View (spheres, rainbow, N blue to C red):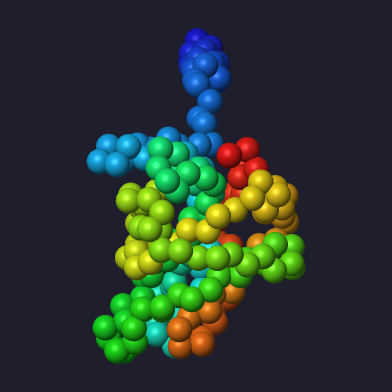
Length: 182
């Protein structure tokens, strides 16, 4: 009798899992103070740069995702780039990077962007990275660029800072397969 109960419970669990609604790969946000609407991917690409000179475990992060903006003078599709860090620079006296340029390497081919402060495009941040967030940028992006990124098998980022240091960020998580659908 006990095996039948186990089988019945297993079948019910499987059926319950199949009956749920599929989760959309996109998230809609509304900034009620400005009326701006954002449509973005649910899970941004997460890239990481090790900082061994500052910490054995601390890392700098680059988050990237396409965001469609409507309801403002800045309507269009952008790549949002958010920078964060888990490195406590107060111990070493080092300052946070002052980002000047981002180059994505998409299957080895460089893709450059004209960066603007995100706050000049939209009032609200599209994503909270969950680490100390110190800078956000946006760059207009074409459907062709989004398709290239979505089809990529290898992505990395080269970030040039004001002090001419250029750390390389490597993919640590997230997916780009839905980017071309935005």
